[in-house]
Length: 396
Image (cartoon, rainbow, N blue to C red):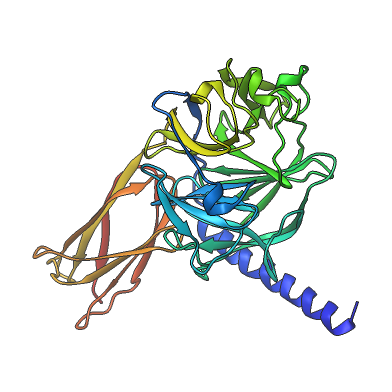
């Protein structure tokens, strides 16, 4: 290796770690929120053929506010989340082989290295590349990981699991798992992850025509659980036997059944969930008795339910005051979400402000500014687990 390149790479990695440490400090107070799938059903299901948009099936799946992103052999496509109508290719056109998302914020990411998105086969992951929810273009609001991790296909497929303020990944070579906290980027080792510990062909994790499989990371009873698709391990015949979604408990290594589909889910090996709409979204090829047969290549959705805090929201409200306790009208109040998005409001005639319907479990920054006044401090960091009603800023 070129010496200059080696030292530059070392410097960049050191810089990433230092920046991540700062971010960890800012979000250290965020509480871990229970997030668990209660049920995945075939009720109210809808499927469409995607091959004309993305090419043949490949794997990656993730959900934004308005779009389901799915990656095929030729491109990553966008499909309207309400009815899966074709929303077209990404703009600019791109192919993301390592999609994931924060289920709370619906922010979509691609696992990435210092040099760009991770390609099929895997590689070293040092950042999460944030994608625009409408176009899929990189936004520049990347999350730097506290340490790089290697995720590859190998003995088995790698695994990518979207969760509530977390993404969990597993390496196919070492079968080691890693939790990525969001939005801090803090990486924690989960140790050996054996999704083949249960007996019986129907419990094997299904394999994609790609390097990884996609599922959901839950958190309940102080442990992470990985939900993944499993079906009979006979290539080309998967849909003709029973299928199920299994749940692996990282704490004790046990595997249980989350949902059974006796008429089969075909070769399903990538799915995600959307608590906001009480749905789950998935891909499978060809025949599935559970979802009324199908096309050549299918993406679809059906009804799901979730444990708290699937739709839990809260509010932040308060006042901006003069020294004598009189409210100041017209002050600009800005809220910064945990994922970097912002919202702005003005204080009313009594100096009051409010932000409502905020997903719980996050750390929000509230800042104030006015032409005629200064404030010390002018920003407060607020952890939202319930309504916060007493936030105050006082002019100097």
